[in-house]
Image 1 (cartoon, rainbow, N blue to C red):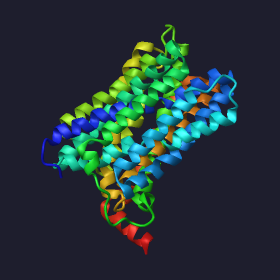
Image 2: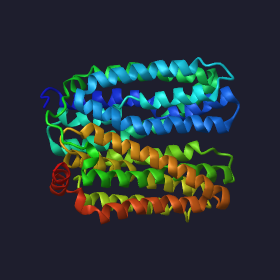
Image 3: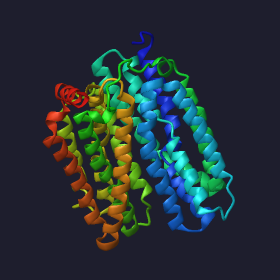
Image 4: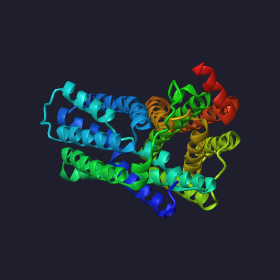
Length: 399
């Protein structure tokens, strides 16, 4: 454990990781806008965004596994450099570039995405001695991560509108490289060392980790469906407002929930706590349905519904240290990020079909149902979310 200035060490981890993740939160939409600009086809742009999303889902756990074997510094520096080079290459492409080239670059960018989020979560316990303070730190981290999702898309789309989509990608490359290298240079990141004895089978050998991944897959579906439903609601509202203010309030609600949880000393990372929070998350989003006739009431309820997001994620992250097999903690966090991203993509696609056929209200019901599915998954598999059972399960797998 680091004895000097643990809070300042955690603060530096938060600040640099947030800067590094700001452009990462919007590379999908940035690549989509750039591909649409170069090809003139939204269908082609959608394929490019899908290639990036799939590659990110594949690359995250692979990068996490490398970190668990080689440490953070080398993997972060190499992936940041590769991402920056590939992003600059994509930014310099001329109009009329073949779709195959765009797909290849998007896949490469996804595979090379620096695992900053997984690394900061793995490093936090090394700078904070008190377990309760670690839980608070996870709550703060989950809340701070919302800043990237609130500020990221306007950052990229605004640059694209003012200076061109290529410039937006180039600026993203510079920010990713500089901020990731700054994070990798922090003492907490450089000093983090993988466990010498690594459990066979990786993070997913744990029954508890498989449960958490399934839970976050459904939570991701809720996120993606809500984004589509809120966008559709904004388009049908009497006012000419866009979806951005609604989604910003949703993110601010999560930020507030994370801050409140952190100020109360965090919450014990237990299966029962996770089940309760998932129930609150689902209920909060279901309550959006009866207020969908009023833009003001809908906006206010989004703030309330979002308040459960950061606490839910904080408790989920807090369970990883107990459930992940020895030497797989970074890979475990990467799997959770992948599950959330894949779920969000599925939720967006399914909610898009629902909105097209029936409007935003059924899509809101679908989002709440995804939250209920997450809660039921955690409830039915609650026995796997205990350290003792996880260790037994991993031992049996290894045998």
